[in-house]
Image 1 (cartoon, helix red, strand yellow):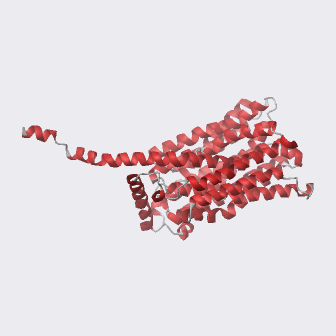
Image 2: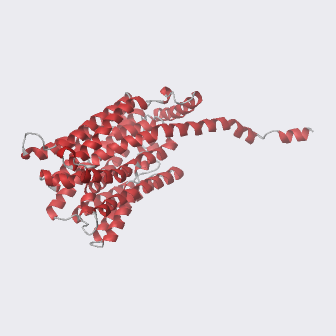
Image 3: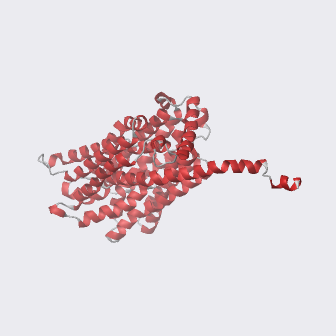
Length: 457
Protein backbone atom coordinates (compact mmCIF):
# COMPACT_ATOMS: atom_id res chain seq x y z
CA UNK A 1 0.00 0.00 0.00
CA UNK A 2 2.83 2.38 0.81
CA UNK A 3 4.32 1.68 -2.60
CA UNK A 4 1.00 2.43 -4.31
CA UNK A 5 0.64 5.66 -2.32
CA UNK A 6 4.15 6.69 -3.27
CA UNK A 7 3.42 5.96 -6.93
CA UNK A 8 0.25 8.07 -6.80
CA UNK A 9 2.08 11.12 -5.40
CA UNK A 10 3.20 13.65 -8.05
CA UNK A 11 6.91 13.84 -8.77
CA UNK A 12 8.84 17.10 -8.15
CA UNK A 13 8.63 17.86 -11.86
CA UNK A 14 4.86 17.30 -11.85
CA UNK A 15 4.46 19.53 -8.79
CA UNK A 16 6.38 22.29 -10.61
CA UNK A 17 4.07 22.01 -13.60
CA UNK A 18 0.99 22.04 -11.35
CA UNK A 19 2.24 25.10 -9.45
CA UNK A 20 2.91 26.96 -12.70
CA UNK A 21 -0.46 26.13 -14.24
CA UNK A 22 -2.37 29.07 -12.67
CA UNK A 23 0.34 31.54 -13.73
CA UNK A 24 0.34 30.17 -17.27
CA UNK A 25 -3.43 30.57 -17.41
CA UNK A 26 -3.24 34.16 -16.12
CA UNK A 27 -0.51 34.99 -18.64
CA UNK A 28 -2.52 33.56 -21.53
CA UNK A 29 -5.70 35.38 -20.48
CA UNK A 30 -3.91 38.68 -19.95
CA UNK A 31 -2.04 38.63 -23.26
CA UNK A 32 -5.21 37.74 -25.15
CA UNK A 33 -7.28 40.41 -23.45
CA UNK A 34 -4.69 43.17 -23.95
CA UNK A 35 -4.27 42.22 -27.61
CA UNK A 36 -8.00 42.19 -28.34
CA UNK A 37 -8.62 45.43 -26.47
CA UNK A 38 -5.81 47.56 -27.90
CA UNK A 39 -4.49 46.32 -31.24
CA UNK A 40 -7.66 46.48 -33.42
CA UNK A 41 -8.36 50.04 -32.27
CA UNK A 42 -4.76 51.21 -32.72
CA UNK A 43 -4.73 49.63 -36.18
CA UNK A 44 -7.89 51.56 -37.08
CA UNK A 45 -6.28 54.83 -36.01
CA UNK A 46 -3.10 54.10 -37.96
CA UNK A 47 -5.12 53.16 -41.03
CA UNK A 48 -6.56 56.67 -41.19
CA UNK A 49 -3.21 58.25 -40.34
CA UNK A 50 -1.51 56.50 -43.23
CA UNK A 51 -4.46 57.09 -45.54
CA UNK A 52 -4.43 60.84 -44.92
CA UNK A 53 -0.72 61.16 -45.62
CA UNK A 54 -0.76 58.92 -48.74
CA UNK A 55 -4.02 59.89 -50.48
CA UNK A 56 -2.23 62.75 -52.24
CA UNK A 57 -0.87 60.06 -54.58
CA UNK A 58 -4.42 59.52 -55.92
CA UNK A 59 -5.70 63.09 -55.54
CA UNK A 60 -2.79 64.37 -57.64
CA UNK A 61 -4.16 62.59 -60.72
CA UNK A 62 -6.82 65.34 -61.00
CA UNK A 63 -5.34 68.00 -58.73
CA UNK A 64 -2.32 68.53 -60.98
CA UNK A 65 -4.49 69.44 -63.96
CA UNK A 66 -6.86 71.64 -61.96
CA UNK A 67 -4.12 73.55 -60.14
CA UNK A 68 -1.39 73.30 -62.82
CA UNK A 69 1.16 71.65 -60.52
CA UNK A 70 4.18 69.72 -61.86
CA UNK A 71 5.47 66.37 -60.59
CA UNK A 72 8.29 68.32 -58.94
CA UNK A 73 5.82 70.46 -56.97
CA UNK A 74 3.78 67.42 -55.93
CA UNK A 75 6.94 65.55 -54.91
CA UNK A 76 8.19 68.50 -52.85
CA UNK A 77 4.80 68.95 -51.20
CA UNK A 78 4.56 65.25 -50.40
CA UNK A 79 8.02 65.47 -48.82
CA UNK A 80 7.38 68.67 -46.86
CA UNK A 81 4.96 66.63 -44.76
CA UNK A 82 8.00 65.03 -43.13
CA UNK A 83 9.65 68.37 -42.27
CA UNK A 84 6.75 69.23 -39.96
CA UNK A 85 6.84 65.65 -38.73
CA UNK A 86 10.57 65.95 -37.99
CA UNK A 87 10.37 69.12 -35.90
CA UNK A 88 7.84 67.83 -33.37
CA UNK A 89 8.53 64.09 -33.33
CA UNK A 90 10.79 63.73 -30.27
CA UNK A 91 8.87 66.16 -28.00
CA UNK A 92 5.60 64.50 -28.99
CA UNK A 93 6.95 61.02 -28.24
CA UNK A 94 8.21 62.11 -24.82
CA UNK A 95 4.77 63.53 -24.01
CA UNK A 96 3.30 60.07 -24.68
CA UNK A 97 5.88 58.48 -22.35
CA UNK A 98 5.74 61.04 -19.54
CA UNK A 99 2.20 62.44 -19.63
CA UNK A 100 -0.67 60.57 -21.25
CA UNK A 101 -0.76 58.49 -24.44
CA UNK A 102 -4.55 58.55 -24.40
CA UNK A 103 -4.90 62.33 -24.31
CA UNK A 104 -2.01 63.10 -26.63
CA UNK A 105 -2.99 60.58 -29.29
CA UNK A 106 -6.53 61.98 -29.17
CA UNK A 107 -5.13 65.50 -29.72
CA UNK A 108 -3.06 64.28 -32.65
CA UNK A 109 -6.07 62.60 -34.29
CA UNK A 110 -8.33 65.64 -33.99
CA UNK A 111 -5.69 68.09 -35.22
CA UNK A 112 -4.63 66.10 -38.25
CA UNK A 113 -8.27 65.39 -39.15
CA UNK A 114 -8.93 69.12 -39.34
CA UNK A 115 -5.80 69.80 -41.41
CA UNK A 116 -6.38 66.82 -43.74
CA UNK A 117 -9.94 67.94 -44.50
CA UNK A 118 -8.83 71.56 -44.98
CA UNK A 119 -6.36 70.41 -47.68
CA UNK A 120 -9.39 69.90 -49.91
CA UNK A 121 -9.88 73.68 -50.10
CA UNK A 122 -6.45 74.49 -51.56
CA UNK A 123 -6.71 77.00 -54.43
CA UNK A 124 -10.06 78.42 -53.30
CA UNK A 125 -8.51 81.32 -51.41
CA UNK A 126 -8.47 84.88 -52.85
CA UNK A 127 -4.66 84.94 -53.13
CA UNK A 128 -4.63 83.89 -56.78
CA UNK A 129 -3.01 81.06 -58.74
CA UNK A 130 0.55 82.19 -57.99
CA UNK A 131 0.12 81.08 -54.36
CA UNK A 132 -1.43 77.65 -54.99
CA UNK A 133 1.85 75.74 -54.72
CA UNK A 134 2.67 77.52 -51.48
CA UNK A 135 -0.78 76.68 -50.08
CA UNK A 136 -0.13 73.03 -50.91
CA UNK A 137 3.29 73.13 -49.23
CA UNK A 138 1.85 74.80 -46.13
CA UNK A 139 -1.00 72.29 -45.84
CA UNK A 140 1.40 69.35 -46.09
CA UNK A 141 3.74 70.92 -43.50
CA UNK A 142 0.84 71.40 -41.06
CA UNK A 143 -0.36 67.84 -41.62
CA UNK A 144 3.09 66.49 -40.75
CA UNK A 145 3.31 68.70 -37.66
CA UNK A 146 -0.16 67.59 -36.57
CA UNK A 147 0.60 63.88 -36.99
CA UNK A 148 4.07 64.06 -35.40
CA UNK A 149 4.41 61.63 -32.53
CA UNK A 150 1.58 59.30 -33.50
CA UNK A 151 3.60 56.38 -34.86
CA UNK A 152 6.49 56.47 -32.34
CA UNK A 153 3.95 57.28 -29.63
CA UNK A 154 2.11 54.05 -30.35
CA UNK A 155 5.42 52.13 -30.45
CA UNK A 156 6.21 53.47 -26.97
CA UNK A 157 2.61 52.82 -25.85
CA UNK A 158 2.84 49.16 -26.89
CA UNK A 159 5.89 48.78 -24.63
CA UNK A 160 3.60 49.76 -21.71
CA UNK A 161 1.36 46.76 -22.45
CA UNK A 162 3.42 43.99 -24.09
CA UNK A 163 6.42 42.10 -22.74
CA UNK A 164 9.64 42.13 -24.77
CA UNK A 165 8.99 38.61 -26.10
CA UNK A 166 5.50 39.61 -27.30
CA UNK A 167 6.34 42.94 -28.92
CA UNK A 168 7.54 41.72 -32.32
CA UNK A 169 4.24 39.93 -32.92
CA UNK A 170 2.16 42.85 -31.61
CA UNK A 171 4.10 45.30 -33.75
CA UNK A 172 3.77 43.01 -36.77
CA UNK A 173 0.00 43.26 -36.55
CA UNK A 174 0.19 47.01 -36.01
CA UNK A 175 2.58 47.47 -38.97
CA UNK A 176 0.25 45.50 -41.23
CA UNK A 177 -1.92 48.60 -41.15
CA UNK A 178 0.50 50.45 -43.46
CA UNK A 179 -0.05 48.26 -46.53
CA UNK A 180 -3.65 47.60 -45.46
CA UNK A 181 -4.29 51.34 -45.57
CA UNK A 182 -3.02 51.38 -49.14
CA UNK A 183 -5.06 48.29 -50.11
CA UNK A 184 -8.24 49.82 -48.70
CA UNK A 185 -7.41 53.48 -49.23
CA UNK A 186 -6.31 53.52 -52.87
CA UNK A 187 -9.53 51.98 -54.27
CA UNK A 188 -11.58 54.14 -51.89
CA UNK A 189 -9.70 57.29 -52.90
CA UNK A 190 -10.00 56.35 -56.56
CA UNK A 191 -13.75 55.79 -56.16
CA UNK A 192 -14.19 59.18 -54.49
CA UNK A 193 -12.06 60.79 -57.20
CA UNK A 194 -14.16 59.32 -60.02
CA UNK A 195 -17.67 59.38 -58.49
CA UNK A 196 -18.04 62.08 -55.83
CA UNK A 197 -18.51 65.58 -57.26
CA UNK A 198 -20.94 67.06 -54.75
CA UNK A 199 -21.76 70.79 -54.74
CA UNK A 200 -19.74 71.29 -57.91
CA UNK A 201 -16.43 70.42 -56.23
CA UNK A 202 -14.10 68.05 -58.13
CA UNK A 203 -13.42 64.57 -56.76
CA UNK A 204 -9.87 65.27 -55.61
CA UNK A 205 -11.16 67.81 -53.09
CA UNK A 206 -13.58 65.25 -51.65
CA UNK A 207 -10.73 62.74 -51.33
CA UNK A 208 -9.12 65.00 -48.73
CA UNK A 209 -12.37 66.11 -47.07
CA UNK A 210 -14.09 62.72 -46.71
CA UNK A 211 -10.95 60.94 -45.54
CA UNK A 212 -10.00 63.66 -43.05
CA UNK A 213 -13.27 64.16 -41.18
CA UNK A 214 -13.50 60.66 -39.60
CA UNK A 215 -10.22 61.31 -37.76
CA UNK A 216 -11.83 64.06 -35.71
CA UNK A 217 -14.50 61.63 -34.47
CA UNK A 218 -11.91 58.91 -33.84
CA UNK A 219 -9.86 61.36 -31.79
CA UNK A 220 -12.81 61.96 -29.49
CA UNK A 221 -13.32 58.20 -29.10
CA UNK A 222 -9.60 57.72 -28.37
CA UNK A 223 -9.78 60.04 -25.35
CA UNK A 224 -12.33 57.73 -23.75
CA UNK A 225 -11.31 54.29 -25.02
CA UNK A 226 -7.56 53.97 -24.45
CA UNK A 227 -5.96 53.33 -21.06
CA UNK A 228 -2.53 54.77 -20.29
CA UNK A 229 -1.11 52.04 -18.02
CA UNK A 230 -2.12 48.56 -16.79
CA UNK A 231 -2.72 49.82 -13.25
CA UNK A 232 -5.60 51.95 -14.61
CA UNK A 233 -7.18 49.14 -16.65
CA UNK A 234 -10.62 48.42 -15.20
CA UNK A 235 -11.06 45.86 -17.99
CA UNK A 236 -8.32 43.62 -16.49
CA UNK A 237 -8.89 41.46 -13.40
CA UNK A 238 -6.71 41.84 -10.34
CA UNK A 239 -4.50 38.83 -11.05
CA UNK A 240 -4.12 39.89 -14.70
CA UNK A 241 -2.99 43.36 -13.66
CA UNK A 242 -0.52 41.95 -11.15
CA UNK A 243 1.02 39.52 -13.64
CA UNK A 244 1.44 42.13 -16.39
CA UNK A 245 2.78 44.83 -14.07
CA UNK A 246 5.31 42.45 -12.50
CA UNK A 247 6.62 41.42 -15.94
CA UNK A 248 6.96 45.01 -17.14
CA UNK A 249 8.50 46.12 -13.84
CA UNK A 250 11.18 43.42 -14.14
CA UNK A 251 12.09 44.71 -17.60
CA UNK A 252 12.15 48.30 -16.37
CA UNK A 253 14.44 47.36 -13.48
CA UNK A 254 16.85 45.62 -15.88
CA UNK A 255 17.12 48.83 -17.94
CA UNK A 256 17.76 50.91 -14.80
CA UNK A 257 20.54 48.53 -13.72
CA UNK A 258 22.09 48.83 -17.19
CA UNK A 259 21.94 52.63 -16.89
CA UNK A 260 19.90 53.17 -20.04
CA UNK A 261 16.75 55.00 -19.07
CA UNK A 262 17.68 58.71 -19.23
CA UNK A 263 17.08 60.88 -22.30
CA UNK A 264 20.82 61.50 -22.64
CA UNK A 265 21.46 57.74 -22.87
CA UNK A 266 19.72 57.66 -26.25
CA UNK A 267 22.09 60.32 -27.64
CA UNK A 268 25.18 58.43 -26.46
CA UNK A 269 24.34 55.19 -28.24
CA UNK A 270 26.13 54.64 -31.57
CA UNK A 271 23.55 51.96 -32.20
CA UNK A 272 20.86 54.65 -32.42
CA UNK A 273 22.87 56.48 -35.10
CA UNK A 274 23.11 53.28 -37.18
CA UNK A 275 19.35 52.72 -36.93
CA UNK A 276 18.71 56.35 -37.97
CA UNK A 277 20.76 55.94 -41.17
CA UNK A 278 19.11 52.61 -42.00
CA UNK A 279 15.63 54.02 -41.49
CA UNK A 280 16.41 57.22 -43.42
CA UNK A 281 17.46 55.23 -46.49
CA UNK A 282 14.65 52.68 -46.45
CA UNK A 283 11.97 55.34 -45.90
CA UNK A 284 13.42 57.29 -48.85
CA UNK A 285 12.88 54.26 -51.05
CA UNK A 286 9.48 53.27 -49.70
CA UNK A 287 7.87 56.72 -49.57
CA UNK A 288 9.05 57.67 -53.05
CA UNK A 289 7.41 54.54 -54.43
CA UNK A 290 4.26 55.00 -52.35
CA UNK A 291 3.56 58.51 -53.62
CA UNK A 292 4.36 57.83 -57.27
CA UNK A 293 3.20 54.23 -57.80
CA UNK A 294 -0.31 55.44 -58.76
CA UNK A 295 1.30 57.69 -61.39
CA UNK A 296 3.50 54.84 -62.66
CA UNK A 297 0.56 52.46 -63.03
CA UNK A 298 -1.57 55.23 -64.54
CA UNK A 299 0.84 55.20 -67.52
CA UNK A 300 -0.09 51.57 -68.26
CA UNK A 301 -2.66 52.76 -70.81
CA UNK A 302 -3.31 49.31 -72.28
CA UNK A 303 -5.21 48.41 -69.08
CA UNK A 304 -8.53 49.71 -67.77
CA UNK A 305 -8.72 52.09 -64.79
CA UNK A 306 -9.87 49.20 -62.56
CA UNK A 307 -6.91 47.07 -63.67
CA UNK A 308 -4.48 49.92 -63.05
CA UNK A 309 -5.90 50.40 -59.55
CA UNK A 310 -5.52 46.67 -58.89
CA UNK A 311 -1.89 46.77 -60.04
CA UNK A 312 -1.30 49.69 -57.65
CA UNK A 313 -2.79 47.71 -54.77
CA UNK A 314 -1.16 44.33 -55.47
CA UNK A 315 2.30 45.18 -54.06
CA UNK A 316 0.67 46.19 -50.77
CA UNK A 317 -1.40 43.02 -50.57
CA UNK A 318 1.91 41.19 -50.86
CA UNK A 319 3.34 43.52 -48.20
CA UNK A 320 0.74 42.36 -45.66
CA UNK A 321 1.93 38.77 -46.10
CA UNK A 322 5.58 39.86 -45.90
CA UNK A 323 5.14 41.74 -42.62
CA UNK A 324 3.23 38.93 -40.91
CA UNK A 325 5.54 36.16 -42.09
CA UNK A 326 8.76 38.00 -41.24
CA UNK A 327 7.41 39.17 -37.88
CA UNK A 328 6.20 35.66 -37.01
CA UNK A 329 9.48 34.01 -37.97
CA UNK A 330 11.57 36.63 -36.14
CA UNK A 331 9.41 36.15 -33.06
CA UNK A 332 10.06 32.39 -33.16
CA UNK A 333 13.80 32.57 -33.76
CA UNK A 334 14.66 35.75 -31.84
CA UNK A 335 17.04 36.73 -34.67
CA UNK A 336 16.91 40.41 -35.62
CA UNK A 337 19.76 41.32 -37.98
CA UNK A 338 18.85 39.21 -41.00
CA UNK A 339 15.12 39.65 -40.50
CA UNK A 340 15.81 43.37 -40.92
CA UNK A 341 18.45 43.30 -43.66
CA UNK A 342 17.18 40.63 -46.05
CA UNK A 343 13.76 42.24 -46.75
CA UNK A 344 15.50 45.54 -47.59
CA UNK A 345 17.96 43.84 -49.95
CA UNK A 346 15.15 41.96 -51.71
CA UNK A 347 13.04 45.10 -52.08
CA UNK A 348 15.91 47.16 -53.53
CA UNK A 349 16.86 44.39 -55.96
CA UNK A 350 13.24 43.98 -57.11
CA UNK A 351 12.92 47.71 -57.89
CA UNK A 352 16.09 47.58 -59.97
CA UNK A 353 14.83 44.50 -61.84
CA UNK A 354 11.54 46.32 -62.53
CA UNK A 355 13.51 49.06 -64.28
CA UNK A 356 15.55 46.53 -66.25
CA UNK A 357 12.35 44.76 -67.38
CA UNK A 358 11.58 47.67 -69.72
CA UNK A 359 8.22 47.35 -71.50
CA UNK A 360 7.56 43.75 -70.43
CA UNK A 361 4.50 44.60 -68.36
CA UNK A 362 4.05 41.22 -66.66
CA UNK A 363 7.64 41.27 -65.39
CA UNK A 364 7.35 44.87 -64.19
CA UNK A 365 4.19 44.06 -62.22
CA UNK A 366 5.79 40.89 -60.80
CA UNK A 367 8.86 42.75 -59.57
CA UNK A 368 6.71 45.51 -58.07
CA UNK A 369 4.83 42.79 -56.15
CA UNK A 370 8.12 41.29 -54.94
CA UNK A 371 9.33 44.74 -53.88
CA UNK A 372 6.03 45.27 -52.07
CA UNK A 373 6.23 41.94 -50.25
CA UNK A 374 9.69 42.81 -48.88
CA UNK A 375 9.50 46.61 -48.61
CA UNK A 376 7.91 46.76 -45.14
CA UNK A 377 8.58 43.25 -43.85
CA UNK A 378 11.45 44.60 -41.72
CA UNK A 379 9.19 46.91 -39.69
CA UNK A 380 8.05 44.74 -36.74
CA UNK A 381 11.60 43.50 -36.14
CA UNK A 382 13.27 46.88 -36.61
CA UNK A 383 11.05 48.64 -34.09
CA UNK A 384 11.82 46.12 -31.33
CA UNK A 385 15.48 47.19 -31.42
CA UNK A 386 15.33 50.50 -29.44
CA UNK A 387 13.44 48.94 -26.53
CA UNK A 388 15.84 45.97 -26.59
CA UNK A 389 18.69 48.06 -25.21
CA UNK A 390 17.06 51.18 -23.76
CA UNK A 391 14.21 51.81 -21.34
CA UNK A 392 11.68 54.47 -20.29
CA UNK A 393 12.59 58.00 -21.48
CA UNK A 394 15.74 56.78 -23.25
CA UNK A 395 13.74 54.30 -25.34
CA UNK A 396 11.08 56.91 -26.10
CA UNK A 397 13.77 59.40 -27.14
CA UNK A 398 15.50 56.81 -29.34
CA UNK A 399 12.23 55.88 -31.06
CA UNK A 400 11.48 59.57 -31.63
CA UNK A 401 15.00 60.27 -32.96
CA UNK A 402 14.99 57.30 -35.32
CA UNK A 403 11.51 58.04 -36.61
CA UNK A 404 11.99 61.80 -36.98
CA UNK A 405 15.40 61.76 -38.68
CA UNK A 406 14.54 58.61 -40.59
CA UNK A 407 11.31 60.06 -41.89
CA UNK A 408 13.27 62.87 -43.53
CA UNK A 409 13.58 60.16 -46.16
CA UNK A 410 9.90 60.80 -46.73
CA UNK A 411 10.95 64.26 -47.90
CA UNK A 412 13.96 63.10 -49.91
CA UNK A 413 12.29 60.19 -51.71
CA UNK A 414 9.24 61.92 -53.24
CA UNK A 415 11.18 65.13 -53.94
CA UNK A 416 14.08 63.45 -55.76
CA UNK A 417 11.73 61.07 -57.59
CA UNK A 418 9.53 63.98 -58.71
CA UNK A 419 12.58 66.03 -59.73
CA UNK A 420 14.09 63.17 -61.77
CA UNK A 421 10.73 62.43 -63.39
CA UNK A 422 10.26 66.06 -64.40
CA UNK A 423 13.85 66.31 -65.66
CA UNK A 424 13.99 63.02 -67.61
CA UNK A 425 10.35 62.64 -68.63
CA UNK A 426 10.23 59.04 -67.32
CA UNK A 427 10.17 57.03 -64.11
CA UNK A 428 13.28 54.90 -64.66
CA UNK A 429 15.84 57.28 -63.12
CA UNK A 430 13.67 57.79 -60.04
CA UNK A 431 13.19 54.05 -59.56
CA UNK A 432 16.95 53.49 -59.81
CA UNK A 433 17.48 56.10 -57.10
CA UNK A 434 14.91 54.44 -54.81
CA UNK A 435 16.49 51.05 -55.47
CA UNK A 436 19.97 52.27 -54.51
CA UNK A 437 18.70 53.80 -51.26
CA UNK A 438 16.91 50.58 -50.25
CA UNK A 439 19.90 48.39 -51.12
CA UNK A 440 22.24 50.60 -49.09
CA UNK A 441 19.83 50.40 -46.14
CA UNK A 442 19.96 46.61 -46.35
CA UNK A 443 23.76 46.60 -46.43
CA UNK A 444 23.91 48.82 -43.35
CA UNK A 445 21.38 46.57 -41.60
CA UNK A 446 23.84 43.67 -41.89
CA UNK A 447 25.94 45.63 -39.38
CA UNK A 448 23.29 45.20 -36.68
CA UNK A 449 24.83 42.96 -34.04
CA UNK A 450 22.59 40.78 -31.92
CA UNK A 451 24.73 41.26 -28.82
CA UNK A 452 25.26 45.01 -29.30
CA UNK A 453 22.30 46.17 -27.22
CA UNK A 454 23.59 44.28 -24.21
CA UNK A 455 27.23 45.28 -24.46
CA UNK A 456 27.47 48.71 -26.03
CA UNK A 457 27.27 51.28 -23.25
